[in-house]
Image (cartoon, rainbow, N blue to C red; front, side):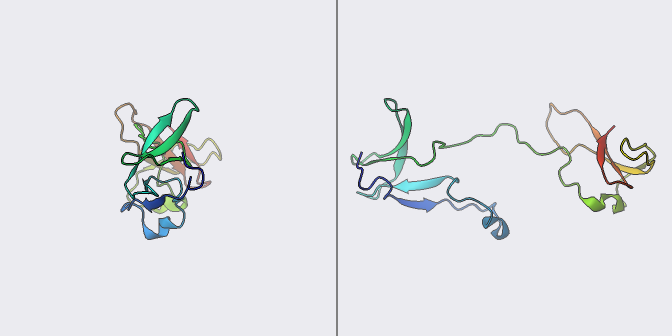
Length: 143
């Protein structure tokens, strides 16, 4: 491994069409996946494990150039998305005329006016859960 040019490789960030321009300022581009290129021959670097030192390296397949990976994560495959059950609930949800109304009593303020909706998770292992939003205190509770 060359110590003088350890982090001298060129980096080109991937183009992420699902990230809007307004979100781009909040995205940490250093933690996102990127292509790395060899400082010697400009070919793409590939991840390789250094088993002796238990660390991740990027190596060129065309020349002996190797560099230490800044981030030990190469790829993350999330099998179950962690979308909140009440995703999209806003403070003025009680003003939505399309939501059904109920006279269920709020456990927080004892008010008897609320709107309800079904859980937003669309997985097979999720049961049908109803969420109620109190029109008085705006808190969300389950049935």
